[in-house]
Image (cartoon, rainbow over all chains, first blue to last red; front, side):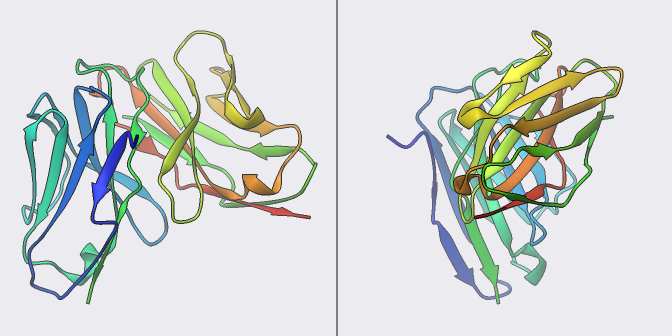
Length: 116
Length: 114
């Protein structure tokens, strides 16, 4: 069984479009995250939700809006896509909801977004 | 504030020889430290983690890392490289009050030659 899954795996779209990426985890974890990996493979956190509550919101353009319908799902909606949004987006989950860095994060396979 | 520096962007080793990937960190609090591996076009997989217990940490696939507070280092080693070890490796730090926010290093690409 897949622990953290993302759909779609690949997404190719035109500038200005709106798109969504979905993430689901079946690990029973409390906390979920979105990361962006750029073309140089640098990974940076974008958002985190704990039990459907937003707890981390880095300096991300407000065209990006995360939504967590329940603690097993965290979706990422992107409005008015730009060329610079092209990247690989990773979802991750972690078991502990309270502040604590001791728990590792489990990553999904990634969604490669290409904006033309 | 926390940060991670991976001292080598690229490491090339021969199959069967030791691997050393160097990582230095900066953290205001007691950090957790991780090494993740990313094979081409794949997600990230945890190799090992340090969480203030033993300073020598053993991970999967024969990897281990040693936490040295005095040197603020967390270098990753493996005694004998396999072809399957060719991948990108990330050193990662997380502070205990950071809601699990991970700060990634820039990555080290490992190439293994026959």
